[in-house]
Length: 370
Image (cartoon, rainbow, N blue to C red; front, side):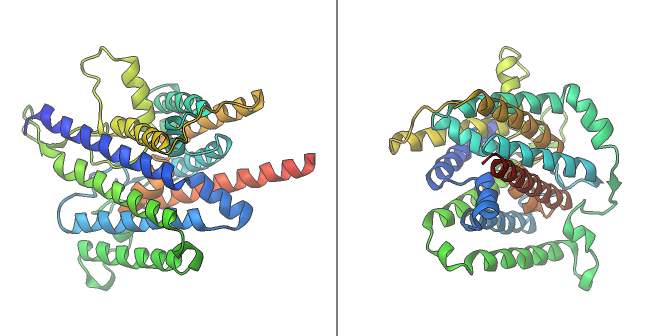
């Protein structure tokens, strides 16, 4: 398949996955920030269990693909030998604080854009701008020189993954150990998810967990298998249609930045639509389609100047934090964790902690003012 044709296939596939993701996320009210809020403020675990179900499904599917030889999980941004622990922690905390101030993570913001929420349009623009300046601009220097400087080099054959850390246990080969650990972790998650009688009665939460988890698996297969081919110029095997030139799946912070960059440099022939950019468009389109079909599309806007400031600050923190932690609640919390990356687990925990702490502070301030 020609290079341009293969890239087009990856992009259209990403758009399709984004549409499905956005449609289901809108229909089921899938929201990772909302999941944390439900647990912290009401003790309700329904949406958190949906998130965990998505993680388990993604984990099983992703590692099954790797075991069968369809994808190479060592060729991702999550599984390298470098372990910049401070970046994972600071980036995750910033993202968690930001998504709470902005009333939703990057994915939820795109879903709300498709539903007519003008606040989320502002969040998308500020988040995307902060993301691109953290990737390539002035904030990038701080990220690389300060936050990524204190790092541990994990000289494991299979990168910074949990199986690599535990390699040698039981005399199992790395691939078998990877699959075994996946089974143990995923089974534990599934038991926790489905032991709740109320969750078993909630079709939307089960649907969102299943479809969003499968969309991550499909993304890995699309970019990591279909998109892995010989470059006709260098005659080397490479990944087509991704910004990182590695295998990618669903993530929404850096791709939002690349989307703004694509718009800004529209006439630059070297600036192309990638899998990540296509998924950003797809989520918005999918959410819009659901809103139109169900007649729930409506314009929403800021209620006050303070509301606008909170969303803008939150968006900037999400853009900076999502790039620094190398992913958001989807990018690290599902896609990264599906690779069993140690950094993904740390970033995921930091995001949840940042969000939960912010909610507690907000509640304390509200009680003091009451």
